[in-house]
Length: 343
Image 1 (cartoon, rainbow, N blue to C red):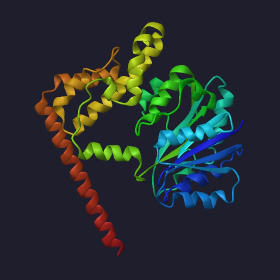
Image 2 (tube, one colour):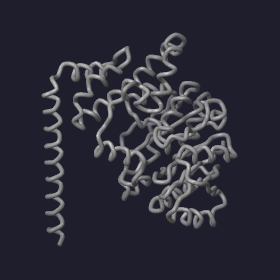
Image 3 (cartoon, rainbow, N blue to C red):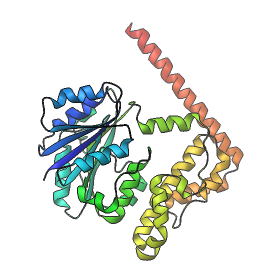
Image 4 (tube, rainbow, N blue to C red):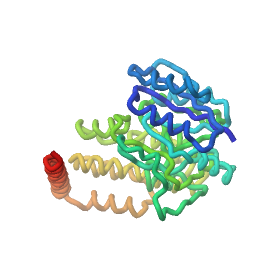
């Protein structure tokens, strides 16, 4: 079994060496590494060229900036092997990541998309050198992606996933949209093919790198939020799944229930974002987007929104802001005391 590892790169000079080295030090050695430089304007490409000059497994392909989805598509089309493993330029793998992916593919041969568990780390931390936490039971199995992703939105991440190359010819490639193109593809693939997963934390997502999701959260924090008018306004994955709901309900009722759970989890995220932003008058409309059947979490949030007067919801928002300010203030004081003590 051989892998084509696709690393999409755009202006990650400070982090790309960590990502490259985490791939090249894999204990599973049967792979090629395709770096798609998506029009970087910093020194990222120079870093990659320096490493590629000493390792024949690395191929570099440069293109005009087209976004992460188009960069990954270019890598998939250049892949020589039957399985494509993805990694972002500001993330990293543990040294046994590909070995764990290969084990999943071997144990669950019908699966065409497989994933390990993602673990968050701070950008200054060499987290990919850590071992699995002591006492953490390792589990592997074929899973219901939509149910699992309703429980944890990063269940499949663009740095933890591997996909059979043939799948792209069947369900299509990543879209050109700058956000949510990855979740949309996972949804398309997992409606058509089985998914297998491992609980081993072999992929690391680093906070503080200025990635797309961090930019999105900052935008939500600083700009006025518009409530979603319909399910199609939530995410690209939800928009795609909403179009499939009628046929799923009549032809694949069990899948429909899982997809409804997945969509409801995204509605809940929208509710919480608007509540935490103080947009309490949007909450009732957002709660109307929930799909039946309602699970326990959905029933809870519907009850909160529909039975709590707006004045109390505003009070919750103000209380949360005060608590957040107090937490930041106490952290600032503690840091100041620590700095003075050290000096």
